[in-house]
Length: 180
View 1 (cartoon, rainbow, N blue to C red):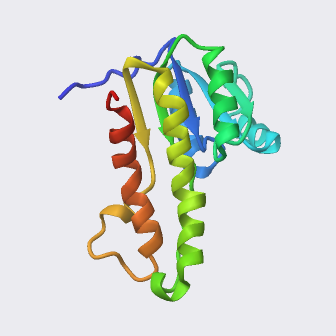
View 2 (view 1 turned 90 degrees about the vertical axis):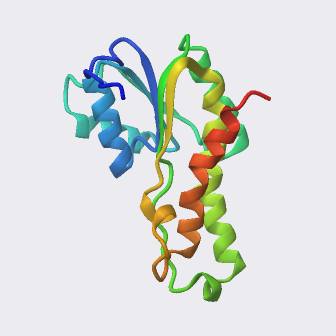
């Protein structure tokens, strides 16, 4: 097991998908403290401004806010092009684009609810992986963050759809990372 000293990201590039959210903002802060230049895509400039405010004055010199929607195919391709033009390769990607979702019962909620969870919680993970894995340095690390719901056995009441979605990103990244 390798012990990290905390400076491995100094002068390197990272992306935090979902970086304006509660989990993502802490990832952005950690990457900045480690010396990385951090790209943060968001659909909202207001959310990017709020993130900069949370980080505090003087902490944003290496923060690269990007307005775009990684949750759509066109948006993901656009962000991929924008990031590729500004980096020689990514050393770290943390993908945390989704929030928690709970229903009373997956079966009672019905297919439309399940499809909504797949589209809004899993699909952004797929698009992020598709857009960002090709930009990774060989020694880089890609982490998909979706919470523990995918590993809780048996899933607790109300966790069905999100448990399914939470289990998928790690497999998705593994499959996408394999050479074709």
